[in-house]
Image (cartoon, rainbow, N blue to C red; front, side, top):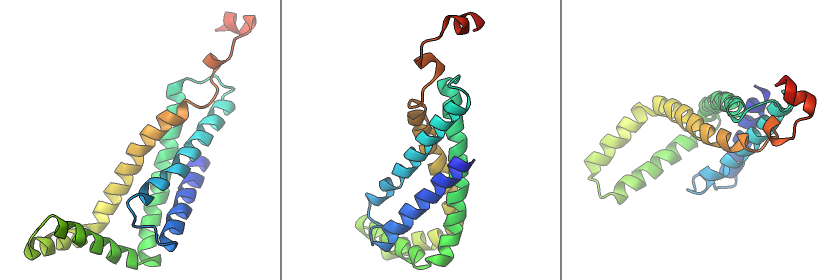
Length: 166
């Protein structure tokens, strides 16, 4: 749990830094946040493996990372609600960007207004679903990558007494 919590906090710090520096709404910036996510899951995987004396399988380590991803999702969801109050202009900036994308699609003003009204109406449910789904989906993939890093029993040679007991 602690690794998931700390990873979520690291991701929030990166998000806030990107936002304060003016890069928060750049398309590439969304990918930067996954760096601390992967690093946190790798650290979690190594700690899990070590805590179990390296007697773990890939699936056990992946499962530990996926559970940490669930904690990250909860932390990011809480931050999502807090950030609506701390940075209220983020919602408006997001709506402006959505409008620009709809204009690029050559939609009529009426269609754009309808789409934006729907987005405003369902903003919080979309935020909740989007945060949970994206964090867990990416967390599953990054957990698989992170599970490859730690030492596992199969990676180190067994002594004769260990071979016999297994």
